[in-house]
Length: 412
Image (cartoon, rainbow, N blue to C red; front, side, top):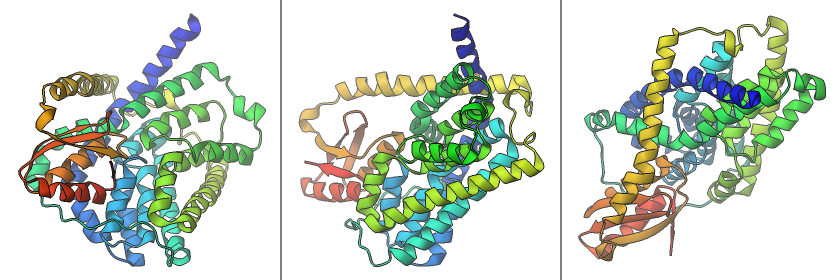
């Protein structure tokens, strides 16, 4: 019983630490969404040059898109004419760290680790993109048909929808993995003995290899991986090993790798995985050297950090809890009631594979709405379906093309 009480307590501590910083991250991400929509990103990255590799890395680092949601965006960028190197840079940089995950890193691991995480993501993405441009230049991936999206949102429109964007696209895309990550962090904090990794895995390099093997196939978003990494460090794991997990876990997973092969080709995918592996191990080793030389007291100490007043943290926890509650109520109750009230007999229904989060469902909705003559668009994420009205059935092929161009697959 005592273990269970401590388990709940640790979950509460982790949740209370990250909540307010996550909200700050959402706000920053919302501002970025207003200033830099995906259309601007595609326009700047749609060039076959090394300059686009640098741009894709700089664009990708602050964006809060998870490793499942980033693949369709990368496909769309590739369809706009971007080089494979810039696509790979975007695939690496975007899920490794975003505005939200940086703020959580700052709250749990300190600003030094947070800055180091950004720098290592920058190095990894640039290295992967440049090497893929050189080695995989002549390899053909999948090029999907082009489609012009007529749905152009103005800055004012995006500003008006910022709270919806924060609630459904940002929080919605990480809600489940974030809660799972906090629970896992609480479990490690209670059930893994202090000094476990120092006792049973004395070699820092061995622990980094273990995190590499776990991180590559595992799906975990950047925000969710941070509490897990913090709890592992508290139990004696080297910061370098934790960094390996933070670099590989969000940037790769078994599902996205299979999709990436089809987009950039096998050779480029091998380069992509090799660079992430080698770079993460090397940068993890460098972080361990840095820690050994300058100490670790300013990098992590979860329970000793009081950067914000407790009332502000509690307020953030309450607001995030309300947002989570509304998201799950809306997703599991309200949306289902709305769908039951729709007369499906007169609706166009398309089965869409590749949708895994709220960011995906919103991308599909925007793709359909971008075709003239469509209305009443509804996306069923669980059922992998999109329903809509259309004034001219001959336009259905354009709708399919728009969805495919967005990076998703129509299933007959």
